[in-house]
Length: 146
Image (cartoon, rainbow, N blue to C red; front, side, top):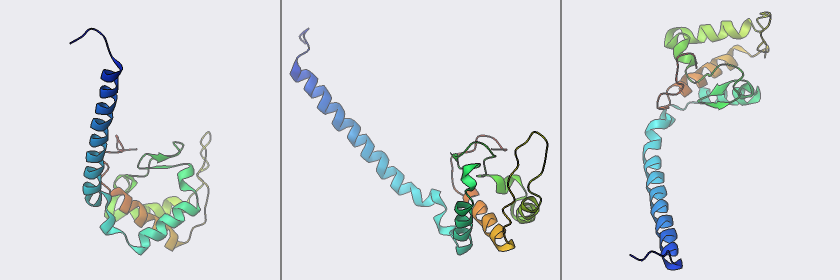
């Protein structure tokens, strides 16, 4: 091999590397598309979950909370709140009680606003948070309290 680096060699490295990484990109895209349906929990989507997502968006919950790592880091992560706060048996009563007693009025702590949601809206948010807790997130959040 010669000791000089020619333009032809540089061109071959550039195009060869570009093709190599483009093929890797295509393979990873294909893999993601194949595994997405089993990871997304799409089969469990109900009207109640959709209404809960609508309430979530209308009240800008993501302006303070994170969900699956996305959103503001001001208030707790809610991706696993369903398991943290009672699961199937106790989550809805917990959420109803929590929403009714807002704001807490603890000195030195910013309060969650009182949104005055109806019982149905709180049930729908509970269903949305239950649904989102069943998404395969590869272990996110990294700790129990989010």
